[in-house]
Every structure is written in structure tokens, then in C-alpha cells.
Length: 403
Image (cartoon, one colour):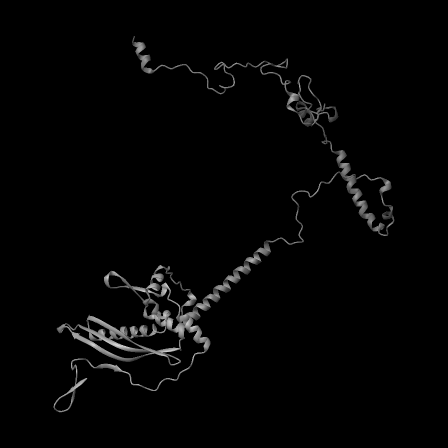
């Protein structure tokens, strides 16, 4: 409403109110593009879902309570995810300053302004809502306007987006949903190096570095394989066995004349093989002759007292040295088992045959005493140190001498 004076000019209702900072002029509407049925169904499905705890933030409210809200950058990411990066746009319709107060000569001021924001989809659907921003006791007017306009515009966009569905922030006004959101566990999102957008120069440098490291790794693996192949023994190589694979019995080298195949005696290669046979016969004859002429060959057992005589061989006749009879059994030794046989022996067979302790069954040996002078309890005090006489204290000896 307005009033007029005598001159007929109209005066504003509140002459002290600041003018509008921005009013968008109505222009031709943008060209629209309809969503397909599949896109509509997909968008509607996403809009009906509630926000997860990772999208919700908290700030202190009145009465010591906390208020749940969604940050501006998260709301923009959700809008791009639901509608697409080219599926929606936002515009500022108007901006009006509510108050601007200066605080004397200090240069500080307080500002509050409101804006009207519109969010339009590519098919022409739009929502408008208000956004508000304020600051008290700002250091300068420029700082106050910058902060208030950004805050008001972000607030207006969030309020417009919540009109489209729950996933864009409308679910935070439902107390039932907010209670369930607070019960869910909030997990942190870990980003991988590939999730970051890097500068092209830096990315190319990293790519070359990875290629060099990969090539060096392949060369090391190839060198390791070559080293293994070099150390590995070939398949056709002869390996000396550690133990015989089978027991070879004694072979009779002397064959009968009837067992010899005479067909080899009339071979065509007899003349050529004759020299080889003669050489082998000469070699064997020389070995046998050397064995016969060896005077030190004396395969026999002798007594210990005759060992020195055998080594000297003064007369050169080793056959005259008496040999040791390994089968000789002394008649002075009483044996409980037969030493010439290897058979299992039962305890009952030898029980009672062992001579009692302390009785010498040999006539020519001295009987050993069985009594212990230190302790008559034989068998329990073996190893006890000898008894020592009681020593008197040095002081007692001196007193005895004085007396």
C-alpha cells in the first residue's frame, strides 16, 4: 500500500526499509525435456528412501537438544545423484534486506536478509522456497553481505530440494525416522587413491613411475626363475644313490663249461676282440701274481701277545704263529645261555641259575666283601663320603692348654 501527498506523488509505506537488492525479470521459459517412464520410476524410487546416518549432521538446538540437518554440499551431491548433473538447475528469484544496523564509529554492523530460490527440473517441474541469512556484530559490511547471501541461498536450495522427497532432506522432519536414524551405526567412508582426481601432469608422472617399478619387478622375477633353473639338476643326469635299491646276492663268477654260449667264440669280430681279451687276461694275471707274491697277506686272528711277533716276522714264516680260536669257550665260566645260538631267552629259564651275590663261583678269584663299614644297610648308603673325626673349636683347645 502507498499514500499520496498534495502534489499527487506516492510515498512508500516504510520509507526507512532498504530497497530490494535483486528481483529477477521474468523471461522466456527454458526448453523442457520430458523424463522417460524408466527415469521417472527410478527417480521416484530414490526419492522415497530415507537418508542414512552418514548424510545426517547435528547442531545444538534450544533447550539443550540437538537438531538434525543435512549440509549443503551433501544436498547438492544427492540432487546430482537423483536427477543427474544436467537434470536440474537453481536460480535466485529475489533478495530482500530485512535490516542493516551500524554500531557507531566501530565499523561493525548487523545484517539480515532473505532470498527466494527456485529449483527447476529438466521437464519443467519446479519448487520455490525462502532462504534466510544473518550475522550480528560483523567486522565490516562486505563480510556481513558475503556471509548472509551465501547462507541464505544455500538455505533456499535445501528447502526447495526437500519438497521433492525424503531422500533430499524431507525425512529429517519426521520424528519416527530420525529416531531410527540415530540408532544406526555411522561408518566412515575410506577413499582409495584412484578415487581422487589428480592433476594430469602428476597423473602422467605417477603412471611412468608405476611402469618403471612394474618393469623392475618383472626383471627380478625373471632373474629368480633363471637362478632356479640353473640350480635345478637336469633330468637325465646321473645321481649316485645314497643306499642300494635292492640287495644283490653273491654271484658265482665261475661258470660251468656247459653254461657258456659257444656262438660268441666263432664271431666275425674275433680277430679284433682278441687283442682286448689278451690285454684283460694279462691284467688279471698280473693282479693274481701280485696277490700271490704279497708276503704281508695273513687273514687270521691271533692273540694279543702274538700280534707283535706277527708284525716283526723275523723268520718269515707266518703260518707257525698260533692263531686265535674264536670258538673257544673257557670251562671256568659258568654260562646260563648258549652263546653259539641266537634265540629268545625267557626269564624263567635263567631264574635261579645266577650265582648269589657275594659268592665267588670261580676258584681262582678273591671274594669281594659285601659289608659296608660306614653303614650296615647295604644298597642304600652307597656313595656316602668317608667318616671324619669331630674337630674341636679352636677356642676350646686354648682353654684346655691353659688348664
